[in-house]
Image (cartoon, rainbow, N blue to C red; front, side, top):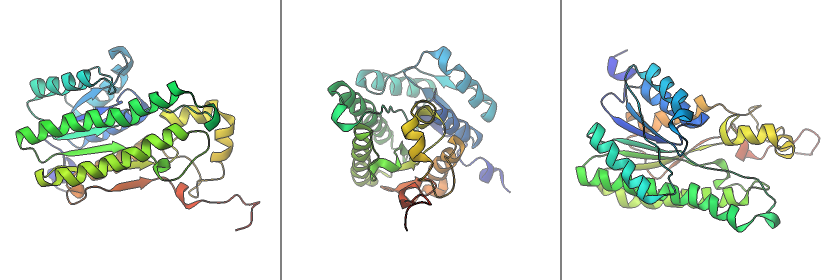
Length: 267
């Protein structure tokens, strides 16, 4: 196997948001292993993100930067990308992965909860996507922007209506971006995980019994996914294998969206 096949992202600069979390860390490690130079960002202090940064350095054998930013804060996002350009001199790939989820029955969702989901999961992706795309267009870079969506962008799941709505909006945002940015050679796609035993869903599995009970009956492939499985899907789109894909969702859900019934229920 050629070196190019082993390191398909060699020479590229990639930014991963939400990098301090389980999913972001796994994605960044996979990209680093494929040869990319990584800039990690999260709203967490640098000390919280340090394990992820070290893991990325170990995977890629090269330094990885951490720049703190909250994706819901547009001036902070603009400063982030200015910092990436100043430090690295280029931008080829952005994984907009930062997000939140908080469970509540629809009738109990507060205005603050609703707004927080939109700010992080939708407006945050708009901020990151637009700032990155502007930089790519200005520099003539035929880059890639990949969002972390969710299987619930199309399938309603009980007690996370704000999250479902924010991810549904993200799907249309990505498609609109893909349509308008194709003329510049910029590809925009979504990786939509199902239920992953890490990060946001992992916390729900540990802390919310009603969520865990539902999960037992809805995954045809038998159990939650892993961050590494999601990271491999991201890598597929980020590498040359994804060069002719834009405006699409790569669903990595173990069959959640197939509506499996429990054994006690009639087929």
